[in-house]
Length: 350
Image 1 (spheres, rainbow, N blue to C red):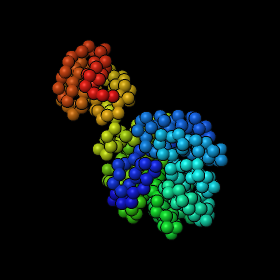
Image 2 (tube, rainbow, N blue to C red):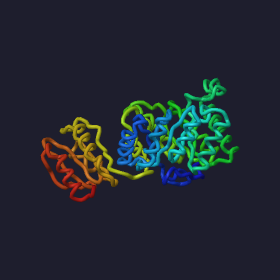
Image 3 (cartoon, rainbow, N blue to C red):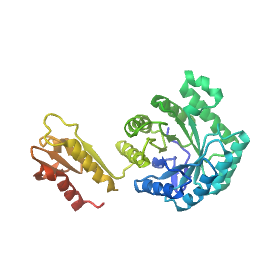
Image 4 (tube, rainbow, N blue to C red):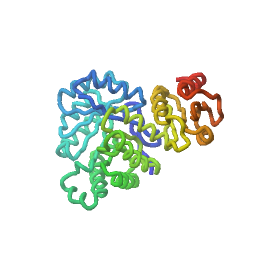
């Protein structure tokens, strides 16, 4: 079910056996090139591999030229309704385009965008969302939303193939997790092009992370999907952090440190939540794969978290620092976090 065709967005391979790529979208006003570049640099620092920016008007296109020139990441221009802005974005150096052929205009306008991408040798993402289906599919969507998503996507795929253009990936998204899963499972069996996964309008960091993990995770676990964006209302850096946590959970990518912590119980005699939050925050700067545990019980902690590289197991007024399930030393409760990082920094490079 994995896609057979590989495309490239800048220097990032998508599909055809390449690692699942992580991308995000800036929340800044693209017309403010300095702010947008600042956010892209922050995204890059957390491992984002592709940055998408909205291009709503000519002023955004003008800023895009500087953004693409200075960005540490390949930049995809997200354009709706106006083919001329998509074509201008190509000229401004975009490494890719995201369009919905259904709202970009007539077939002739879509063809003009495709030709611009062909000449620049950059890919296009065919983006189909449940909330913006063509009028002809809206009634069908009420009774069979998955079929409406799939058929709309296939219509656009056929349009591009008829134009002899194959440098594209597709996305079929809904705010409904079951609909997104169903549509992408079907598409994976019907086309060989790379699939971009996401749950559109997923929500806040808390709810959106859960919906995205359920939807994107279910597809990735079945071998479906080549690039992902975890859409969250808030700082896009959190999208990247969540994406990597999801990929690491599934064994698909390894980057940075991760935290495991116990849910606490009646045996707990330290503030596990506060310690876990502090440890997680301090782990943000680590790029190499590292698993750290915060456990509330001295008796069971090291054993239950024996696979962790390092960990804390709390007790009454004190706790253990352990590595790979083996105790290293006992310290006072107020020094648990400091002692943990002393051991990490003694043995690990940031």
